[in-house]
Image 1 (cartoon, rainbow, N blue to C red):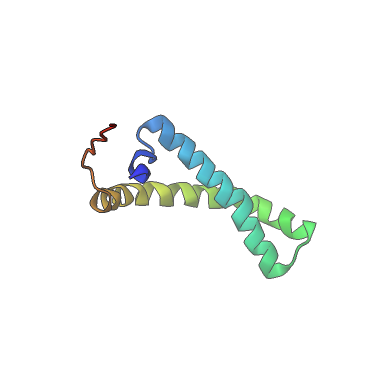
Image 2: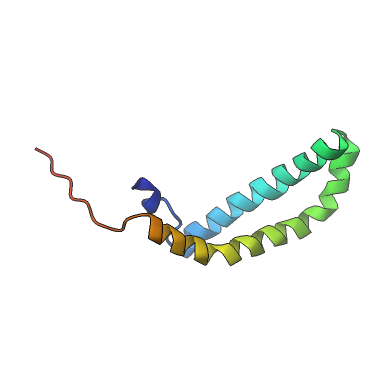
Length: 88
């Protein structure tokens, strides 16, 4: 049930979420995948750097496109009932 409460609930939280996801996926995952395919060299990392702004834009667009369907699906999966906790 805690999953429902930890989703971004306003624009500020959503912006922070987008920043974290884009930093992780663009600056870490994309260069690492390239290095795994080609080899770990500084030249490889330097060749990936000019492409990073394009990848970052794609990540932002994909998150914005999938945000509403994911929110809808989460609403279907997670119960929205209020649970009263009785402390005795």
